[in-house]
Structures are given as C-alpha cells and as structure tokens.
Length: 172
Image (cartoon, rainbow, N blue to C red; front, side, top):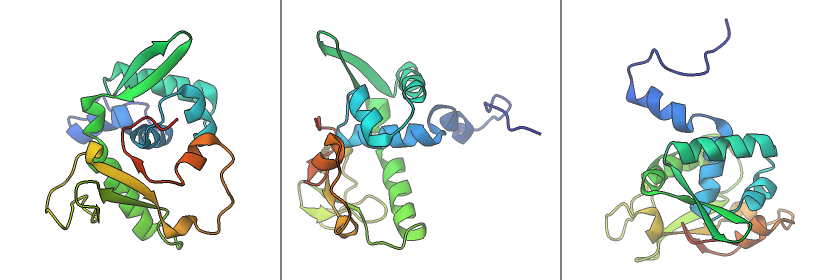
C-alpha cells in the first residue's frame, strides 16, 4: 500500500511539522538558507536539486511562512528565513550533529561556533562558555577537518563556505 502524501489523519504536532519540513530537499534548502544562500540559482547549483522541485519547495516554504520572498532589485528574487524559519535552527543543528555521529566515518565537515564566546557549540547547540543556546544569528559556521583533502568546490556557495560564515547573513 503506498504511503500517503500527507498526515491529515494524524492528531500530532510532529506530523503537522512534517507536513512543512518532512521532505529531504526541504531540509537541505533550509540548511543552505541558514548558511545565507538566498537566490534560486545559488540554491540550485549548490544542492543539485531539479529546478521544478526547488521551485515547488520554495513556494511551499513561503506559503507556510518559513521563508519570505523578497525582490531587492529588478529581476532579482531572494528567499529569506522568517522568524518561524529561524526557529528551526535547533532542529537542523541536532540533525547535523546526529549525522556527524552516526552516518559518516570522516571527521566533521562543519563546525558551529558561538560568535560572542568563540566557542564550539555542543551537540545540544549550547555554548559551553556562557551556557546559552545561541540563536542562528549568533552562530558562525566554520569549515571542519573533514573538508581537508576534498576537491575544491567549483560553484560559488561551496567556495564561499570554505571560510567562516555567520548564519543568516547573505552568502553571495
């Protein structure tokens, strides 16, 4: 029996959340939005997602209030995380950490640091120096040791992420 496409019969907050973010490409799009990627072309190049899928996911995230569509100039569209979208940071950080611990044999590819203390966040997204869980605007992503020896990225987002980047700040 095929899996249904929604969770309408589920009276559960997790099921409702999965309606919005429960698709593989959606979480990767959100990850890149936290990294500061805002333009459709940059998301497409970095993720390798089919254009039709990317357009559908961006529309769904915009409709759900997770992203906001902005037009900063003629023929230029950007997608920016809303406060609702920024609230997903602990979820993405937790998934990232789980993946690092359980799905890969290489050292960490990305390290998240609290800007105010310059300390690496722990697995729960907390700063060990000030004992807070900084919001995404107070976090910087750094290349980790798992990137050493990998081929130089050819697309702009991959190249930009070879340097520290404060989350939510426009990347390109």
